Length: 310
Ligand code: ATP
Ligand code: RIB
Image (cartoon, rainbow, N blue to C red; front, side, top):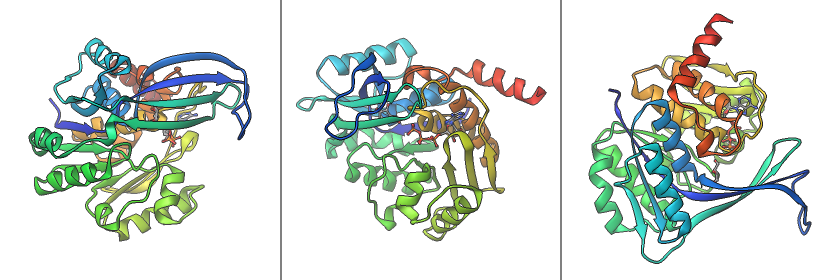
């Protein structure tokens, strides 16, 4: 059994419509398809890690409503532990309004995390033990920042490895960043936090060096179909993405992060864990949706074995 992974993050219901292009400001576009499914960066990453085989606990929050019921039914079907899926008495379950361009597969997202912005002191006392006893804590930015900061402090005090996926981009203190062990921004988030425009391996290295100077030992910058750059642990370099036909890249970063922490929980080095993250994400972009598109371990192993033969 691998090390214990805890994901503390958002659940939201993804309301996804596809159309022939993304609406411009004040424009209405006719859509082609519409689906409702489980989403939210925290939940997606937890599902990815669970399906990839990690010993996983998810801490999240839903409201007492139909979207909250959808979350619980999904976790039950996935056989995921729901002990730390907290229920807010007042706030609604979060939602994300997602538009996907059918041609380019690009998306735009308006996320309203609602219940997940209301982790209070009582919730923290309920989840303190599970964080303290974890080996790896994975966080994102779709929960209230004061709760995130407290979780980081608990983890730091108990020498839990802290992995931060700083998404979606938002302002954050240098003090918080200095407590992170591994940061996993995409190109835009890397630019927002370091000021470096990341477009290739060279600029990714520059951004990584800024993160290192902030006190973060390991950096992984995901770069869409180009793959991911890593710096830290045994070295640095670009690990190319798998060449696949993407049908929906929403949640690619979540698949990557779930795969990455699973590999780390199995004792893999950073470079190998990035490779595993790439494989996990490449399988997820070939399916529609976010959490439902996360691959199972047998699919990841099959893909890695096939790649070794190529
Ligand atoms: P999102 O916000 O949509 O979840 P992201 O911007 O956080 O995604 P990306 O950097 O776009 O994350 O992608 C994460 C990883 O997913 C990449 O490092 C790569 O491994 C994989 N990936 C993304 N797009 C593709 C693609 N078209 N083909 C193969 N792999 C892809
Ligand atoms: O990373 C993709 C996720 O971000 C979607 O599932 C949506 O919920 C948004 O929060």
